Length: 95
Image (cartoon, rainbow, N blue to C red; front, top):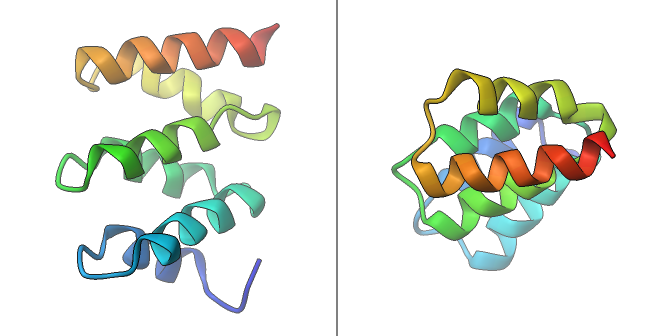
């Protein structure tokens, strides 16, 4: 991970005025560092662009974050489209 903390990466990902490449890189850094809780928080954040939420959701589709992805599916707090995507991603990780 870069010299940024996970909290800084979340802030950048949430910052509407930040450059798209910086926001995407921040999400990628969270994935690389297996910061599953932070990625899940981004997925739950309805105030950011759907594309960044989807990137965070897809970043959870790893063996390291499968339990967090499972929690998202089981808690049922996501909108239907995100819930379905989370279920599909979880199925790919479980295979």
